[in-house]
Image (cartoon, rainbow, N blue to C red):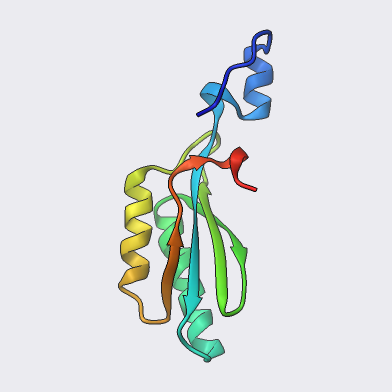
Length: 112
């Protein structure tokens, strides 16, 4: 939940991505179930294509334990619960990785 600060103009709230301009996303932690670099490369490429098809951006990384953050590729856009569920389902259908934790949809400015 974002708290409005009195005195901030609409323009400043927009520049700071707060209040009505807050951007939401979620984090996910994965564990790699393979030692094959080719398998990992294929998984990452497929994941990027899937995310792109839903207008999502991915940030993060790792080797055996992968930490990712998903956000919207649209300016001032936000990830929805449907996006989160779709990513979860897509990953669960894959053998290369397993989900170790899946975060809620939150204001990305609160993730640290």
